[in-house]
Image (cartoon, rainbow, N blue to C red):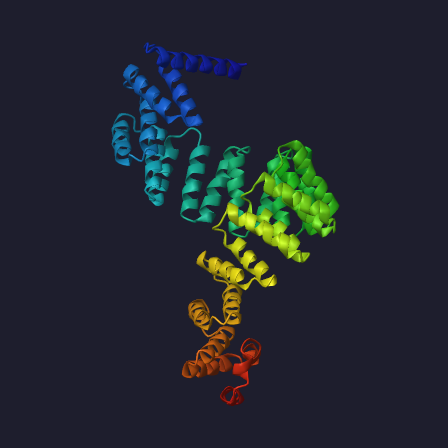
Length: 462
Protein backbone atom coordinates (compact mmCIF):
# COMPACT_ATOMS: atom_id res chain seq x y z
CA UNK A 1 0.00 0.00 0.00
CA UNK A 2 2.85 2.37 0.84
CA UNK A 3 4.48 1.74 -2.57
CA UNK A 4 1.15 2.31 -4.31
CA UNK A 5 0.73 5.64 -2.51
CA UNK A 6 4.33 6.55 -3.40
CA UNK A 7 3.75 5.82 -7.09
CA UNK A 8 0.51 7.78 -7.07
CA UNK A 9 2.17 10.80 -5.44
CA UNK A 10 5.09 10.58 -7.86
CA UNK A 11 2.75 10.47 -10.88
CA UNK A 12 0.86 13.50 -9.55
CA UNK A 13 4.15 15.39 -9.18
CA UNK A 14 5.19 14.49 -12.75
CA UNK A 15 1.81 15.51 -14.17
CA UNK A 16 1.95 18.77 -12.22
CA UNK A 17 5.52 19.48 -13.44
CA UNK A 18 4.76 18.74 -17.11
CA UNK A 19 1.58 20.82 -16.92
CA UNK A 20 3.65 23.69 -15.55
CA UNK A 21 6.08 23.45 -18.51
CA UNK A 22 3.19 23.61 -20.98
CA UNK A 23 1.53 26.63 -19.35
CA UNK A 24 4.72 28.51 -18.36
CA UNK A 25 3.31 28.91 -14.85
CA UNK A 26 5.78 28.52 -11.99
CA UNK A 27 4.56 26.08 -9.34
CA UNK A 28 6.27 25.11 -6.11
CA UNK A 29 7.62 21.60 -5.48
CA UNK A 30 9.39 20.43 -2.37
CA UNK A 31 12.93 19.13 -2.83
CA UNK A 32 11.88 15.49 -2.50
CA UNK A 33 9.33 15.93 -5.29
CA UNK A 34 12.01 17.44 -7.51
CA UNK A 35 14.37 14.54 -6.71
CA UNK A 36 11.71 12.02 -7.81
CA UNK A 37 10.94 13.99 -10.98
CA UNK A 38 14.62 14.30 -11.95
CA UNK A 39 15.31 10.65 -11.14
CA UNK A 40 12.35 9.64 -13.34
CA UNK A 41 13.71 11.59 -16.32
CA UNK A 42 17.18 10.13 -15.80
CA UNK A 43 15.67 6.64 -15.75
CA UNK A 44 13.84 7.07 -19.07
CA UNK A 45 16.73 8.97 -20.70
CA UNK A 46 14.99 12.33 -21.14
CA UNK A 47 17.99 14.49 -20.32
CA UNK A 48 16.48 17.75 -21.62
CA UNK A 49 13.55 17.47 -19.20
CA UNK A 50 15.90 16.39 -16.40
CA UNK A 51 18.00 19.52 -16.96
CA UNK A 52 14.90 21.74 -16.88
CA UNK A 53 13.81 20.12 -13.64
CA UNK A 54 17.28 20.59 -12.11
CA UNK A 55 17.36 24.27 -13.11
CA UNK A 56 13.94 24.96 -11.59
CA UNK A 57 14.69 22.87 -8.51
CA UNK A 58 17.85 24.84 -7.72
CA UNK A 59 16.00 28.11 -8.18
CA UNK A 60 13.50 26.97 -5.55
CA UNK A 61 15.98 25.06 -3.32
CA UNK A 62 19.40 26.63 -3.91
CA UNK A 63 21.02 25.01 -0.85
CA UNK A 64 19.95 21.41 -1.54
CA UNK A 65 22.99 19.11 -1.76
CA UNK A 66 20.92 16.29 -3.30
CA UNK A 67 19.68 18.49 -6.13
CA UNK A 68 23.17 19.83 -6.80
CA UNK A 69 24.38 16.25 -7.06
CA UNK A 70 21.93 15.76 -9.91
CA UNK A 71 23.63 18.72 -11.60
CA UNK A 72 26.94 16.88 -11.17
CA UNK A 73 25.45 13.84 -12.90
CA UNK A 74 24.43 15.99 -15.86
CA UNK A 75 27.93 17.45 -16.09
CA UNK A 76 29.41 13.94 -16.06
CA UNK A 77 26.90 12.77 -18.70
CA UNK A 78 27.88 15.69 -20.92
CA UNK A 79 31.57 14.97 -20.28
CA UNK A 80 32.06 18.32 -18.54
CA UNK A 81 34.28 16.63 -16.00
CA UNK A 82 36.12 19.72 -14.75
CA UNK A 83 32.84 21.50 -14.00
CA UNK A 84 31.56 18.40 -12.22
CA UNK A 85 34.76 18.17 -10.18
CA UNK A 86 34.64 21.83 -9.15
CA UNK A 87 31.03 21.54 -7.99
CA UNK A 88 31.83 18.35 -6.06
CA UNK A 89 34.69 20.13 -4.27
CA UNK A 90 32.29 22.87 -3.14
CA UNK A 91 29.78 20.28 -1.97
CA UNK A 92 32.50 18.38 -0.11
CA UNK A 93 33.38 21.52 1.85
CA UNK A 94 29.75 21.75 2.93
CA UNK A 95 29.02 18.07 3.60
CA UNK A 96 32.20 15.93 3.73
CA UNK A 97 30.35 12.83 4.99
CA UNK A 98 27.93 12.56 2.06
CA UNK A 99 28.67 9.21 0.38
CA UNK A 100 27.16 10.35 -2.93
CA UNK A 101 29.88 13.00 -3.27
CA UNK A 102 32.50 10.26 -3.07
CA UNK A 103 30.59 8.08 -5.54
CA UNK A 104 30.43 10.91 -8.08
CA UNK A 105 34.12 11.70 -7.52
CA UNK A 106 34.91 8.06 -8.25
CA UNK A 107 32.71 8.20 -11.34
CA UNK A 108 34.79 11.10 -12.68
CA UNK A 109 38.05 9.23 -12.06
CA UNK A 110 36.56 6.20 -13.80
CA UNK A 111 35.58 8.31 -16.81
CA UNK A 112 39.21 9.45 -16.98
CA UNK A 113 40.38 5.79 -16.85
CA UNK A 114 41.91 6.39 -13.42
CA UNK A 115 40.36 3.29 -11.96
CA UNK A 116 42.77 2.84 -9.04
CA UNK A 117 41.91 6.36 -7.83
CA UNK A 118 38.22 5.60 -8.27
CA UNK A 119 38.62 2.53 -6.07
CA UNK A 120 40.43 4.55 -3.37
CA UNK A 121 37.60 7.12 -3.31
CA UNK A 122 34.96 4.38 -3.13
CA UNK A 123 36.81 2.78 -0.22
CA UNK A 124 36.47 6.12 1.58
CA UNK A 125 32.75 6.21 0.77
CA UNK A 126 32.31 2.95 2.70
CA UNK A 127 33.09 4.86 5.91
CA UNK A 128 29.97 6.99 5.48
CA UNK A 129 27.60 4.53 3.87
CA UNK A 130 24.75 2.80 5.69
CA UNK A 131 24.19 0.36 2.80
CA UNK A 132 27.50 -0.85 1.37
CA UNK A 133 26.15 -3.20 -1.31
CA UNK A 134 25.98 -0.55 -4.06
CA UNK A 135 29.50 0.66 -3.30
CA UNK A 136 30.85 -2.89 -3.27
CA UNK A 137 29.31 -3.30 -6.74
CA UNK A 138 30.95 -0.09 -7.99
CA UNK A 139 34.34 -1.22 -6.65
CA UNK A 140 33.85 -4.58 -8.37
CA UNK A 141 33.16 -2.85 -11.67
CA UNK A 142 36.30 -0.73 -11.35
CA UNK A 143 38.36 -3.88 -10.82
CA UNK A 144 36.75 -5.34 -13.95
CA UNK A 145 37.95 -2.29 -15.90
CA UNK A 146 41.45 -3.11 -14.61
CA UNK A 147 41.06 -6.81 -15.59
CA UNK A 148 41.63 -7.72 -11.93
CA UNK A 149 39.05 -10.46 -11.86
CA UNK A 150 39.95 -11.97 -8.48
CA UNK A 151 39.52 -8.58 -6.80
CA UNK A 152 36.32 -7.94 -8.74
CA UNK A 153 34.96 -11.33 -7.71
CA UNK A 154 35.76 -10.58 -4.04
CA UNK A 155 33.64 -7.41 -4.07
CA UNK A 156 30.74 -8.89 -6.01
CA UNK A 157 30.66 -11.70 -3.46
CA UNK A 158 30.49 -9.03 -0.74
CA UNK A 159 27.50 -7.54 -2.58
CA UNK A 160 25.77 -10.91 -2.35
CA UNK A 161 26.61 -11.19 1.33
CA UNK A 162 24.86 -7.86 1.85
CA UNK A 163 21.93 -8.67 -0.46
CA UNK A 164 21.41 -12.29 -1.43
CA UNK A 165 18.92 -11.32 -4.14
CA UNK A 166 21.27 -8.96 -5.99
CA UNK A 167 21.13 -10.90 -9.25
CA UNK A 168 23.25 -8.34 -11.06
CA UNK A 169 26.07 -9.12 -8.62
CA UNK A 170 25.44 -12.85 -9.10
CA UNK A 171 25.84 -12.51 -12.86
CA UNK A 172 29.04 -10.51 -12.35
CA UNK A 173 30.45 -13.11 -9.95
CA UNK A 174 29.77 -15.82 -12.53
CA UNK A 175 31.45 -13.72 -15.21
CA UNK A 176 34.56 -13.55 -13.00
CA UNK A 177 34.51 -17.28 -12.28
CA UNK A 178 34.22 -18.04 -16.00
CA UNK A 179 36.96 -15.64 -17.04
CA UNK A 180 39.25 -17.17 -14.42
CA UNK A 181 38.22 -20.64 -15.67
CA UNK A 182 37.16 -21.55 -12.14
CA UNK A 183 34.24 -23.75 -13.13
CA UNK A 184 34.48 -26.07 -10.14
CA UNK A 185 34.69 -23.14 -7.71
CA UNK A 186 31.67 -21.58 -9.42
CA UNK A 187 29.70 -24.83 -9.06
CA UNK A 188 30.64 -25.07 -5.39
CA UNK A 189 29.57 -21.47 -4.76
CA UNK A 190 26.27 -21.84 -6.62
CA UNK A 191 25.38 -25.00 -4.73
CA UNK A 192 25.99 -23.14 -1.45
CA UNK A 193 23.92 -20.22 -2.72
CA UNK A 194 21.06 -22.52 -3.76
CA UNK A 195 21.05 -24.18 -0.32
CA UNK A 196 20.04 -20.77 1.08
CA UNK A 197 17.88 -19.70 -1.85
CA UNK A 198 16.48 -22.93 -3.38
CA UNK A 199 13.91 -21.31 -5.66
CA UNK A 200 16.28 -18.88 -7.36
CA UNK A 201 15.88 -19.56 -11.08
CA UNK A 202 18.91 -17.37 -11.88
CA UNK A 203 21.20 -19.48 -9.70
CA UNK A 204 19.90 -22.76 -11.15
CA UNK A 205 20.34 -21.38 -14.66
CA UNK A 206 23.92 -20.33 -13.91
CA UNK A 207 24.64 -23.71 -12.31
CA UNK A 208 23.40 -25.44 -15.46
CA UNK A 209 25.73 -23.30 -17.58
CA UNK A 210 28.68 -24.24 -15.38
CA UNK A 211 27.87 -27.95 -15.69
CA UNK A 212 27.56 -27.42 -19.47
CA UNK A 213 31.04 -25.84 -19.50
CA UNK A 214 32.46 -28.85 -17.65
CA UNK A 215 30.61 -31.20 -20.09
CA UNK A 216 28.54 -32.72 -17.28
CA UNK A 217 25.46 -32.54 -19.49
CA UNK A 218 23.07 -34.64 -17.39
CA UNK A 219 23.65 -32.46 -14.34
CA UNK A 220 23.26 -29.39 -16.55
CA UNK A 221 19.84 -30.59 -17.70
CA UNK A 222 18.79 -31.25 -14.09
CA UNK A 223 19.82 -27.71 -13.13
CA UNK A 224 17.93 -26.18 -16.06
CA UNK A 225 14.87 -28.24 -15.07
CA UNK A 226 15.01 -26.74 -11.56
CA UNK A 227 15.30 -23.27 -13.10
CA UNK A 228 12.16 -24.01 -15.12
CA UNK A 229 10.35 -25.34 -12.02
CA UNK A 230 11.22 -22.07 -10.26
CA UNK A 231 10.04 -20.00 -13.26
CA UNK A 232 8.22 -21.86 -16.01
CA UNK A 233 8.50 -18.96 -18.47
CA UNK A 234 12.28 -18.57 -18.05
CA UNK A 235 13.28 -18.53 -21.73
CA UNK A 236 17.04 -18.67 -21.03
CA UNK A 237 16.65 -21.99 -19.20
CA UNK A 238 14.76 -23.58 -22.11
CA UNK A 239 17.35 -22.35 -24.61
CA UNK A 240 20.28 -23.64 -22.56
CA UNK A 241 18.53 -26.94 -21.96
CA UNK A 242 17.99 -27.23 -25.72
CA UNK A 243 21.71 -26.64 -26.38
CA UNK A 244 22.58 -29.30 -23.79
CA UNK A 245 20.18 -31.84 -25.28
CA UNK A 246 21.86 -31.25 -28.64
CA UNK A 247 25.18 -32.24 -27.09
CA UNK A 248 23.51 -35.49 -25.98
CA UNK A 249 22.18 -35.93 -29.56
CA UNK A 250 18.61 -35.79 -28.23
CA UNK A 251 17.49 -33.57 -31.08
CA UNK A 252 13.72 -34.13 -30.79
CA UNK A 253 13.77 -33.10 -27.13
CA UNK A 254 15.97 -30.10 -27.99
CA UNK A 255 13.47 -28.98 -30.63
CA UNK A 256 10.67 -29.28 -28.08
CA UNK A 257 12.48 -26.93 -25.68
CA UNK A 258 13.28 -24.42 -28.38
CA UNK A 259 9.65 -24.41 -29.52
CA UNK A 260 8.49 -23.68 -25.96
CA UNK A 261 10.44 -20.40 -26.14
CA UNK A 262 8.58 -19.51 -29.35
CA UNK A 263 5.27 -20.02 -27.53
CA UNK A 264 6.30 -17.96 -24.49
CA UNK A 265 7.49 -14.87 -26.35
CA UNK A 266 8.22 -13.53 -29.82
CA UNK A 267 10.43 -15.87 -31.88
CA UNK A 268 14.18 -15.37 -31.56
CA UNK A 269 16.56 -15.98 -34.45
CA UNK A 270 18.71 -18.08 -32.11
CA UNK A 271 15.88 -20.55 -31.35
CA UNK A 272 14.79 -20.73 -34.99
CA UNK A 273 18.35 -21.42 -36.13
CA UNK A 274 18.86 -24.14 -33.51
CA UNK A 275 15.58 -25.82 -34.50
CA UNK A 276 16.74 -25.81 -38.12
CA UNK A 277 20.05 -27.39 -37.20
CA UNK A 278 18.32 -30.07 -35.11
CA UNK A 279 16.04 -30.97 -38.02
CA UNK A 280 19.08 -31.14 -40.28
CA UNK A 281 20.74 -33.55 -37.83
CA UNK A 282 17.55 -35.65 -37.98
CA UNK A 283 17.76 -35.61 -41.81
CA UNK A 284 14.42 -33.79 -41.98
CA UNK A 285 15.71 -31.43 -44.62
CA UNK A 286 12.42 -29.76 -45.58
CA UNK A 287 11.83 -28.71 -41.98
CA UNK A 288 15.47 -27.72 -41.56
CA UNK A 289 15.47 -25.31 -44.47
CA UNK A 290 12.02 -23.99 -43.44
CA UNK A 291 13.44 -22.89 -40.10
CA UNK A 292 16.57 -21.47 -41.72
CA UNK A 293 14.30 -19.30 -43.86
CA UNK A 294 12.41 -18.23 -40.73
CA UNK A 295 15.75 -17.35 -39.09
CA UNK A 296 16.78 -14.86 -41.76
CA UNK A 297 13.23 -13.47 -41.98
CA UNK A 298 13.35 -12.80 -38.24
CA UNK A 299 16.85 -11.31 -38.34
CA UNK A 300 18.24 -10.54 -41.82
CA UNK A 301 21.50 -9.30 -40.25
CA UNK A 302 22.25 -12.59 -38.49
CA UNK A 303 25.16 -14.03 -40.49
CA UNK A 304 24.74 -17.47 -38.92
CA UNK A 305 21.31 -17.77 -40.55
CA UNK A 306 22.55 -17.04 -44.06
CA UNK A 307 25.60 -19.24 -43.52
CA UNK A 308 23.34 -22.11 -42.37
CA UNK A 309 21.19 -21.86 -45.51
CA UNK A 310 24.23 -21.60 -47.77
CA UNK A 311 26.01 -24.51 -46.11
CA UNK A 312 22.81 -26.59 -46.28
CA UNK A 313 22.65 -26.25 -50.07
CA UNK A 314 26.43 -26.59 -50.35
CA UNK A 315 26.32 -29.88 -48.49
CA UNK A 316 23.54 -31.10 -50.76
CA UNK A 317 25.58 -29.98 -53.83
CA UNK A 318 22.88 -27.56 -54.93
CA UNK A 319 25.47 -24.90 -55.68
CA UNK A 320 23.17 -22.65 -57.68
CA UNK A 321 20.84 -22.21 -54.70
CA UNK A 322 23.82 -21.82 -52.38
CA UNK A 323 25.09 -19.03 -54.63
CA UNK A 324 21.66 -17.40 -54.73
CA UNK A 325 21.45 -17.18 -50.93
CA UNK A 326 25.03 -16.06 -50.38
CA UNK A 327 24.40 -13.29 -52.91
CA UNK A 328 21.35 -12.23 -50.90
CA UNK A 329 23.48 -12.20 -47.76
CA UNK A 330 26.17 -10.07 -49.43
CA UNK A 331 23.52 -7.60 -50.62
CA UNK A 332 22.51 -7.12 -46.98
CA UNK A 333 26.05 -6.98 -45.55
CA UNK A 334 28.81 -6.55 -48.10
CA UNK A 335 31.49 -6.19 -45.42
CA UNK A 336 31.16 -9.71 -44.03
CA UNK A 337 34.33 -11.69 -44.82
CA UNK A 338 32.69 -15.07 -44.16
CA UNK A 339 30.08 -14.34 -46.83
CA UNK A 340 32.73 -13.49 -49.39
CA UNK A 341 34.74 -16.62 -48.63
CA UNK A 342 31.65 -18.78 -49.16
CA UNK A 343 30.97 -16.81 -52.35
CA UNK A 344 34.49 -17.68 -53.52
CA UNK A 345 34.15 -21.36 -52.64
CA UNK A 346 30.76 -21.77 -54.34
CA UNK A 347 31.85 -20.00 -57.52
CA UNK A 348 34.96 -22.18 -57.58
CA UNK A 349 32.79 -25.30 -57.41
CA UNK A 350 30.71 -23.92 -60.27
CA UNK A 351 33.96 -23.21 -62.19
CA UNK A 352 33.22 -19.48 -62.29
CA UNK A 353 36.86 -18.74 -61.64
CA UNK A 354 36.91 -14.97 -62.12
CA UNK A 355 34.05 -14.59 -59.63
CA UNK A 356 35.71 -17.04 -57.25
CA UNK A 357 38.93 -15.03 -57.34
CA UNK A 358 36.93 -11.85 -56.66
CA UNK A 359 35.36 -13.52 -53.64
CA UNK A 360 38.68 -14.61 -52.15
CA UNK A 361 40.25 -11.21 -52.86
CA UNK A 362 37.40 -9.45 -51.06
CA UNK A 363 37.73 -11.90 -48.15
CA UNK A 364 41.40 -10.97 -47.78
CA UNK A 365 40.64 -7.26 -48.05
CA UNK A 366 38.21 -7.66 -45.14
CA UNK A 367 40.93 -9.12 -42.94
CA UNK A 368 40.49 -12.89 -43.30
CA UNK A 369 44.14 -13.94 -43.59
CA UNK A 370 43.68 -17.69 -43.26
CA UNK A 371 46.27 -19.63 -45.26
CA UNK A 372 43.66 -21.59 -47.20
CA UNK A 373 42.12 -18.30 -48.41
CA UNK A 374 45.48 -17.05 -49.72
CA UNK A 375 46.21 -20.40 -51.38
CA UNK A 376 42.74 -20.70 -52.94
CA UNK A 377 43.10 -17.28 -54.55
CA UNK A 378 46.63 -18.03 -55.76
CA UNK A 379 45.55 -21.35 -57.29
CA UNK A 380 42.76 -19.66 -59.23
CA UNK A 381 45.13 -16.98 -60.53
CA UNK A 382 47.56 -19.72 -61.59
CA UNK A 383 44.75 -21.64 -63.32
CA UNK A 384 43.82 -18.42 -65.14
CA UNK A 385 47.52 -18.00 -66.12
CA UNK A 386 47.63 -14.75 -64.15
CA UNK A 387 51.11 -15.58 -62.90
CA UNK A 388 52.24 -12.04 -62.07
CA UNK A 389 49.12 -11.47 -59.98
CA UNK A 390 49.67 -14.84 -58.31
CA UNK A 391 53.26 -13.88 -57.45
CA UNK A 392 52.13 -10.57 -55.96
CA UNK A 393 49.48 -12.32 -53.86
CA UNK A 394 51.87 -15.06 -52.71
CA UNK A 395 54.49 -12.52 -51.64
CA UNK A 396 51.78 -10.90 -49.49
CA UNK A 397 51.05 -14.36 -48.09
CA UNK A 398 54.65 -14.76 -46.92
CA UNK A 399 54.16 -11.77 -44.59
CA UNK A 400 51.75 -13.85 -42.51
CA UNK A 401 53.14 -17.29 -43.36
CA UNK A 402 56.92 -17.10 -43.83
CA UNK A 403 58.84 -20.27 -44.72
CA UNK A 404 55.69 -22.16 -45.71
CA UNK A 405 56.28 -24.98 -48.18
CA UNK A 406 52.89 -24.66 -49.89
CA UNK A 407 53.49 -20.97 -50.57
CA UNK A 408 57.10 -21.48 -51.69
CA UNK A 409 56.24 -24.19 -54.26
CA UNK A 410 53.58 -21.94 -55.78
CA UNK A 411 56.02 -19.03 -55.93
CA UNK A 412 58.64 -21.25 -57.56
CA UNK A 413 56.25 -22.47 -60.26
CA UNK A 414 54.92 -18.96 -60.92
CA UNK A 415 58.42 -17.54 -61.30
CA UNK A 416 59.41 -20.34 -63.67
CA UNK A 417 56.26 -19.68 -65.75
CA UNK A 418 57.24 -16.00 -66.09
CA UNK A 419 60.80 -16.92 -67.14
CA UNK A 420 62.32 -15.69 -63.87
CA UNK A 421 64.42 -18.83 -63.42
CA UNK A 422 66.77 -17.48 -60.74
CA UNK A 423 63.88 -16.59 -58.46
CA UNK A 424 62.11 -19.83 -59.39
CA UNK A 425 65.19 -21.86 -58.42
CA UNK A 426 65.55 -19.92 -55.12
CA UNK A 427 61.95 -20.59 -54.04
CA UNK A 428 62.03 -24.21 -55.24
CA UNK A 429 65.14 -24.94 -53.18
CA UNK A 430 63.60 -23.14 -50.22
CA UNK A 431 60.41 -25.20 -50.57
CA UNK A 432 62.31 -28.48 -50.83
CA UNK A 433 64.35 -27.57 -47.79
CA UNK A 434 61.17 -26.92 -45.76
CA UNK A 435 59.26 -30.04 -46.91
CA UNK A 436 60.20 -32.06 -49.99
CA UNK A 437 56.99 -34.11 -49.81
CA UNK A 438 55.01 -31.14 -51.12
CA UNK A 439 56.75 -31.34 -54.51
CA UNK A 440 53.44 -32.65 -55.89
CA UNK A 441 52.21 -29.03 -55.88
CA UNK A 442 54.56 -28.26 -58.76
CA UNK A 443 53.44 -31.41 -60.57
CA UNK A 444 49.72 -30.59 -60.20
CA UNK A 445 49.71 -26.81 -60.73
CA UNK A 446 52.68 -26.47 -63.11
CA UNK A 447 53.00 -29.77 -65.05
CA UNK A 448 55.20 -28.28 -67.78
CA UNK A 449 57.53 -26.81 -65.17
CA UNK A 450 57.68 -30.14 -63.36
CA UNK A 451 58.88 -31.85 -66.53
CA UNK A 452 61.83 -29.47 -66.98
CA UNK A 453 65.21 -31.10 -66.64
CA UNK A 454 66.54 -28.26 -64.48
CA UNK A 455 63.65 -28.64 -62.01
CA UNK A 456 64.14 -32.41 -61.76
CA UNK A 457 67.87 -31.88 -61.12
CA UNK A 458 67.11 -29.45 -58.28
CA UNK A 459 64.59 -31.83 -56.75
CA UNK A 460 67.02 -34.75 -56.98
CA UNK A 461 69.44 -32.99 -54.63
CA UNK A 462 67.00 -33.21 -51.71
